[in-house]
Length: 251
Image (tube, rainbow, N blue to C red):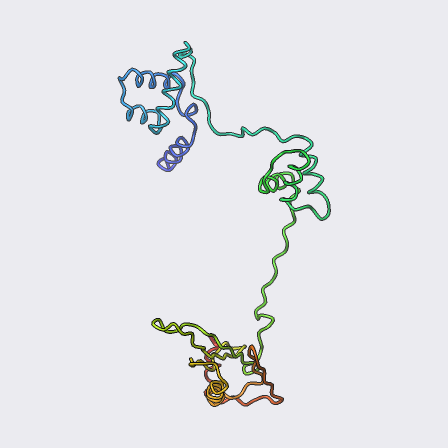
């Protein structure tokens, strides 16, 4: 318990500013010894818990104070804090008016209006932070429940097969693009056919389609970028097709 508390206090001290960690008289004494050369930079920085660059900056400020006969009362300044000037009242009134209306104006529009009407430059993030602090932020839209099935996806296996031809340079040493005919079931996402041909001809489809139909049976509907064929009766899938679809849908 004592070790954990000491560690927490040490971490807390490391993040405190210099005037809160050491007494001003101790800081002036260390800087005076460093300026006189009796204390090395590494030892002085370690004594104050500073980096060398920060030590040299403080030593310069201390020398300037001593040159003005103010070395005995000199203390290091405090960094950080909110140094920004307060926003003008007309700008605050404009933000309240634009964000309290129904529906509220976008943050970027409010920032542009502040620049146009009052020549006061604001970023969208600044307007949003101000709105959050003053309870004028936009309402968060409710999250939509994602559908388990996409709206264009079929629900039954064999209801729709999609046929497409994708020309591409499939072979590294060839500059020719060969079409790849591929066909998949829209429900199970199973590829029922996949083959590369030299050219996309009618004879290519005559070779491609019968092999897919013999292996998996015929679909109710098959579509492509150029053609579509429909069937009025539900086909009877073959055993091979049923087994592969069952294994696909179970995954």
